[in-house]
Structures are given as structure tokens and as C-alpha cells.
Length: 379
Image (cartoon, rainbow, N blue to C red):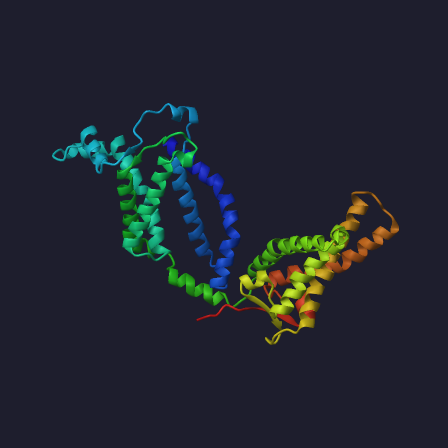
């Protein structure tokens, strides 16, 4: 049993990293297609990812040393079908005419290993039939492809890391794995009765997709403020350098403000109310009455957010650091702390209030008479 615990522990350790890498693309895909995220769908997708990780680690772990593998003289491959069955009949106590031998035979290694290869891909078949809606013949074909990937991984010596295979390529494993996947697809309809169907998840997601949730806005904000803003900052810095304006690039305020203006001012005005992040998750800024927002309203809205709220936060953090970290406790610093802190408190309270009430129409939207709508179509 311990030989199976190590791969599962490794999968548990690797899963948070893989899930984090997949989180943003998964959210973007869900918001683009449905306009919302159904949590049961997230559970299904991420358990599928964990299963694939676990299955992969089960076929490659534990890893031997390269020196130990170099001394191996065992066969590299078995291309003779049904060798596992012949070994089972020859090496176990199983006798078809003696029922008393059946149960003891099931506890012997020559049964356990083939049974493991069947069980390994049963969940794969269940996922393919339940969530991905694949017919049985495709379930079998995809299970065969997954098994072939596993076997080639072993045959290649973990993609050339080892001088030779440390586990044998076995055609019986291909047969057993593909059968396990097909078996999973076969029993999936019975299991699906206990869980929401894919159609139910899709319908619920599209219904929820007409509302712009905080999570959806956060995903758009994250894309704009990390990926897009980073790319625009790099592009403007390169442009300034090519134009010989290196002094502008070294100016911290200018190198920060110009990309902000481009991403949150120029782009929304040109596109009619969307930034790249909002476009990816299908959000658009419009007037509160649903009419298109004019350029000055879009600019005013973004100025309130990035030119006022963001600068209040920066100013408060700067004055707080001056007083309580650098101990520059002058009267002017205390005045600046209060001057930044009082309006910032309003911004924070407004943010928390809208978050709790789920209205999600913050002060900058109210003052600019704007709101955000979903552009996802509900069929």
C-alpha cells in the first residue's frame, strides 16, 4: 500500500500549484462562455485535474536513481497480448473448478497488478462520460490514448532522463487501461443520477451570467492590472527608449501614469467601455440607464478609481510609513496622514458595503452615472 501513498502525497503537494496556474484561464473560459461560475463545475474540473495528476504520479513514482537504472537488464517491453492472464493462471492458486481458490487468488500480486491497471482509468471514463459528454467509443479511444501516453512515458525513460526504461512497456497495460476507461464510461450514467447534469450546470451558469458578480469583476481587474498593464508598461518603456526619451522612462511617476491612462482611459474610450480584461470576461461599462457611456464619463470614472482612490491609498501608505516606520513625526506628516486617511476610510467603507450588499456599484460608478453589464447572451 505504501507504494501508492507516495504518488498520492506528491499529487496533493503539486495540486495547489497546478490549480493556481489553471485558475485564471479556467475562470476566463467560464465567464466568456457562460458569464458565471457554477461551483459544482469547478469541483468537477479540479477533481479531474487532481485525478490526472495522481494517475500520472502513480505510473512514474517512485523514481529510482539513474545509476540504478543503468544497471538494469530486465526486458524493456512486452508486446505479447494476454501475458498477464497467462501469468495469473500459471502463478496463482486459481483453479476454475475449485471455488475455494478464487478468493485467495484475488489477493495475489498477479491479480492485484492487472486489477490496478483497470481501476486506474475507471475515473477517467466516468469524467469523460459525465462532464465531457463523450460517447462510449470515444471514451475507450481516449482511455487508450491516455494509457499509451503513460506507457510511452515509461518506455522513454521519463523523456530521456534515464538511460533506459525503469518500468516495462506492456501491451497488456494498454488493454487493461482502455478497458477500465470504457468500464467507467459504462457505469457513469448510473453515477450521474446523484449529481447535477452538465445541462443543468450550463443552464444555471447562463442564468447567473446575466449578473456581473464581484468575482467576475475581480478576474477582469486581475487581468488588466497584471497581464495587460505589464505588457503596456514594457511596450511604452521600449518605445520611449527607441525615441531617445530615457529620462521619461526613469521618471517613476510618468512611467506609471502613462500605462494606466492607456489601459484604463484610452482603451475603454476606443472600445466603448471595455478593457481587455473586461472584454475577456464579457463585461462592458455603460450608463446607469443602459445607454452607451460617453468618453468623458468613462474617463471620469477611471480617474475617480485610479486617479483618486488609488492615489489616496498610496498617499496614506507613504505618510504611515514616514510616521511609524521612519519616525518622521512632523506636524505636516500627521496632517497628511489624516488628509489621506479620512477620504480613504470612505472608499474602504463604500467597498465593504457594496461587497456585503452585493450591489457592486461603487462610488466611482455612482458619481460617473455608470454601471457594468454582462455582454453574455442568454439563449
